[in-house]
Length: 114
Length: 113
Image 1 (cartoon, each protein chain N blue to C red):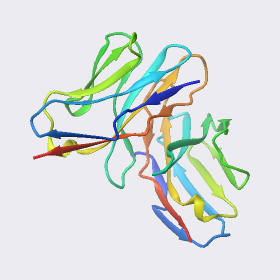
Image 2: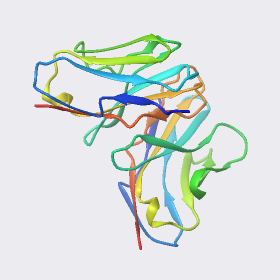
Image 3: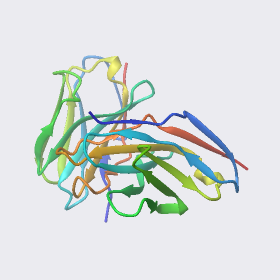
């Protein structure tokens, strides 16, 4: 069965500092991994994905994520945080063994302080 | 291109009433997903369709919930009869394939009194 864990309910970081939002996963086959962001009263917006290839994936708004197969992790990173990055971030996973059910993590609230 | 369109944005109704949520996916997308988001349970997949056919409805809470997709540009999620515990934000999402990201609508905030 697929699962995804976001161990931190909230991450606090100062503007201009690097940020990391953690995600670990469990799947039966090869993982398809996604990060989404949600702003208040809006739907989730896609940030980036890993399907195959380079372990470092670059996405929207300067975000990137590193796929680590041995640690089954897919942490979201950004070199320099902005106050406008404050939002709710979701990691999501599905596997390649059939079916298209995507499992979402519980979400991590990122708070960037000016 | 317009994104996923959901209606209504807000719905307040009394317990026992029928509720119908509507979704128009992005044109050309062949997968459609219905989710429910609550503080307690997070984001839950209720059902998804491929080419208008329901594929997995294992997340539908009970028989009071039903979903249809009569054509490629329209889907409904119906709750009958509604209960206060159904109060949540319901999202519709669509994607071009299983490996492509899902595009979410802005949701319907449902309150059952």
